[in-house]
Length: 282
Image 1 (spheres, rainbow, N blue to C red):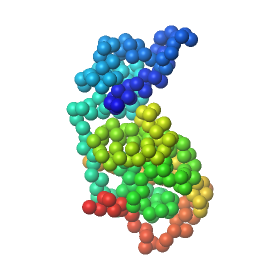
Image 2: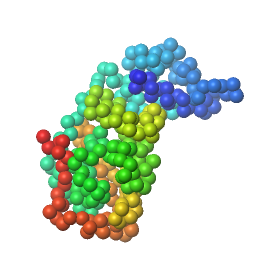
Image 3: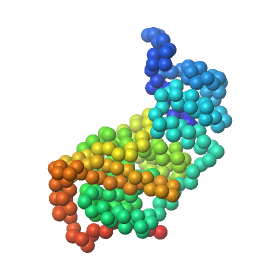
């Protein structure tokens, strides 16, 4: 299925006809807008819009994309995703190599009182500080948080807001797939998740995209209990596709106490340096 075609179909199915001035009655059988209604409201021909949804149209102009975004009620993240999908045939971004610079590891090691991770667009953990390893309760090399959330039933209880986490993961991977459509490792991961998780298949079919840059992240740690953290995502430069994630606790909160307790339960300073994923040492 053409990614642009599928995205357009899912978006128009969610538009309330009444919200855009189209009267409805009980005889209407279409969920959302019809193709001809989207075409009319966007100012394009019905034939051209049908070809867009069939993956047969040439690259649409910015004006057409703006009009479609307006009619379909796309937010800023969805509008950017639409633009990337429309340009996939002409300009396909090469997937980043995932090399973590030593200077980044040094910065990561300076974060002592909060779990901190470096992740790539596939949600592979490329490096993590000591407290991050203690939070996940396992070695960080080889950890992919999408697999961890969807496929590791034994670890599901770690995520206090598991359903919200699944929405975030699928939305992120949808954005990544739109940006790097020729990344075989990403395609393999998506296929693995679809084969192993019915919830992933259902969410993926919705074609939702999410760009989460900050927000609440709650964990139920088996040793220290509930940790209500605030996550900040910092996109790293040089088109690396990597992000630095820092999970902080509010000062004076029970979670701050919980992190201190967690740090005291872990190994001593011999293991205090950031752990680098073996896949990115090359």
